[in-house]
Amino acid sequence: MGGEINQTFVTEFIILGFPSLKKLYPFMFLLFLFVYMFTVTGNLIIFITVITNYKLQIPMFFFLNHLSAMEIWYTSVIVPKMLSTFVTSNRAIPFNSCMTQLYLFSSLGASECYLLTAMAYDRYLAICIPLHYSSKMTNTISHQLSSGAWIGGFISPILPVTLISKLVFCGPNQINYFYCDAQPLLKLSCSNTHFTEAAISVLASGLIFSSFLLTVLSYIFIISTILRIPSAIGRKKAFSTCASHLTVVMIYYGTITAMYMQPMSKFSLDINKVLSLLYTVVTPMLNPIIYSLRNKDMKDSVLKQWKSSTSDPIF
Image (cartoon, rainbow, N blue to C red):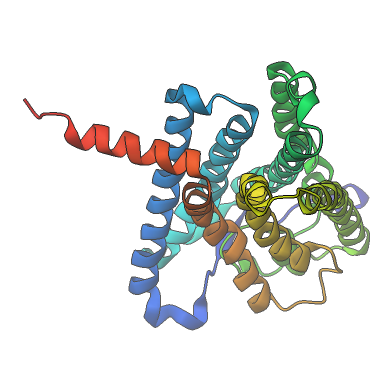
């Protein structure tokens, strides 16, 4: 019998989604379908605009391109399955698919933390030491930073996901959530989850805190430098180059900090659902809006491309 202890009895999970809002499912399907289509389209527009516009071939927009790609993947891992729960009675997800969703979602979230930190470093170099910017932020370095964000992100969740996959699931298999996340899965396990929960909390807190700290330090130096600029126009121009990134950082870290930098037993799943919706669905939708409206070069390029496409003759 000793060899049977780690056996996984559950072969699939049932995604419950939002059971208390079943009457609103048709409306929620249309709403989140629109949000998903807007998110993918908006990030694709940014991605294509940066690639096709020579004026935007600088590290700041190179990083933005990677962020747009991450957002498309990020929301695509979660939203399609969530949409299916609104229109079908088949809400089952196989065990392996659940672990894959957990891994991809966690990897892309970690990658975004690393990339936002790299973007903060880029803005620090551009504003605080502009004379050395071109030598310190070369194409090679920007490629290394973006590659490091992807690689580091996909390495970070290997241990937590492995620990969760090794837990015993022998009882209820209904996940009171809209995707496979660590907290609802831990609640379903028949195993003692104290070690796994502690490991996930430490690793998540370490990742979030370290990347957020580096980002905050960058902005302390950035703001300090901006305040020393003598002219109001100069200060406004300098701040405008990092305002979009700072806005995204505040929204993103605000939600994931509330979610993960604490013991997982503290928050109810209902509160976590709301927070999860913010950073898995709402934030990826806001990024194209924030970067398009707050960045003049990006806004001008998008408008120019739009006018060019609409003015082309049909025949």
